[in-house]
Image (tube, rainbow, N blue to C red; front, top):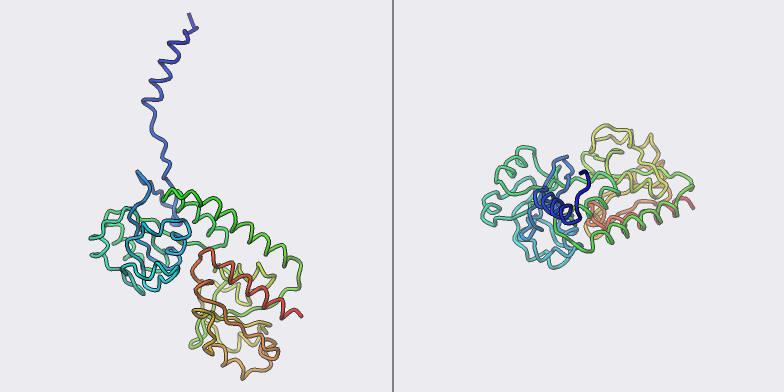
Length: 293
């Protein structure tokens, strides 16, 4: 009596499968902790940061981007796309007119009120806010889910492999004290919460202001001198040295100044949290290795 015929078992199985909820293959958790589900892969994407634009192009989804933020200039194909945001502003009317099926926005790049206004447009919003090198790889995977990119897993894996290689290469080296200057007047730097601080650690270096509470903090000349950085770093587009660190040359008591270890990295590589951040990391590691010698 408890045994079912093969035909009856098959019929019941078909009935269960027919009533089971569908698998949500295009569901991810964004960096704000919100769940986002797309009924189908995104076809009309608004990209609200240069780094996001880079990631989407690297995933092969560049032809699905309908609008970008100011300074989205890499790869070259991004330069011709319509601009819908700049500085702290987003043109909500233009976004509404474009009717995107996915908006990917840099979380800390805009005010909470503006992000809420963006959500009220009733288009799917993904908050992108990588705070570590690993989270960049994770973002690649999540954006790959939303765009059904067949190359996302490989790109993320290659990123992690290169990062591991850099860490292993500089593991156990003498620690070098590094000062990173965001701005010169007032003097602004980054704390240990910022991904740039992790870039330094990858090279076997230490951010002299890693213990500060804010992500971006203002410091004074005296505190920098007291920390005695051995390398001083800033970043400019294209790694063009515009003299941002020249003011420190009046303090020859700083080891970095005495040994001329003043470094300008490519801001487009370092600041955009894309796969190119490892290019900037490799460059910084080489500069720090020179300081060790």
